[in-house]
Image (spheres, rainbow, N blue to C red):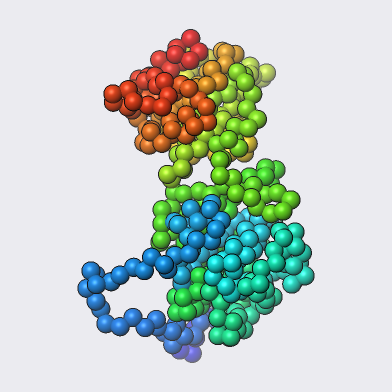
Length: 455
Ligand code: TYD
Ligand code: MG
């Protein structure tokens, strides 16, 4: 037996490889328990199979030109924004997400849009039958001419078709159900997912096809998730959403052709995904007027400001340890902020249950929402509403100080556009010269903010 065709034993969860059988040490350390390594025949030499893309000799950097027309706008504005201004020719985009979140729907709509600008587009469904895809297409009202559908799981067969069809864009739904026949492992195993990803990368780059892959995010188990592909592909998008809410967020977590902070917002409806161009209005639609415990923050996702309603309910704990329940924000962060409120403002929250929620199934991830969370809890505890025309911004430190936030101007502009008139912001961030679309009040401490809004 030569070194080349020796077996490797691989963890199906994280991809850890070992020459010997046993359990995965990485996953054990990470707390996932004892996961058996699965035997895989090593793939035949990669050198022979990976067709080199002809590049010519090295050239000076300044002689290399970037052709702008290599980027195509799909016409789905929210998707274009996340991709960094459109789809790049020859790029490989991975769209990950939980089963049922709407990945196939998104990509079928993308395929339709691309078929109108750069036909033909090939949609390879390795998961559903042609009839199932057709039913979805009918529901979405898709009847594009340049959109070809093929149900095939053998990637070698797909590759053979590419020469005949010459698609400008390709969708593979999903990477976990296609396979390369020369590998022995089952579809969905780490080896298959990796090799199929690598093969599609070569094809995308070599033939200049914009390629989209669907990858299911898997719970622990035998299937390899999109994580094993993240280093390989150009762009990784995650499609997120709660099953009980209609809204879906498309988030870039890696992008070789744009910023990774951008999000696109969609709403799942009867006829597929609809762009939400004004997400702030969407999240604030059902906001109660002047209710205690409700505060609006202007959070920033990439370059996009998003107004979110934070809600807190503080109620006397009936017995035992008081409860802290947090949805849509970081649990530890909320606990920290409640401790600040207790110690610096003197609110006895230790005997209170605290529930925190971001309305509409939204999510806050940045510290700029700290002051909003503090004020929501204080407002509920005091049973006094924060005025409805106020937005709140600021990071809160452990001494109760309110710290500066980035991108204040963008955030305030969005609030003004949605009819807010006043803002409470960190003292250090108050715009010089008093030029602002809102009536801005600077505060240096949590105490000052509580006095200003609830005093
Ligand atoms: P799907 O795109 O199949 O999800 P995924 O490919 O990520 O597994 O769609 C998932 C859900 O979306 C499904 O439960 C039905 C719902 N749906 C709508 O509500 N409206 C629609 O127009 C379509 C096509 C799907
Ligand atoms: Mg699907």
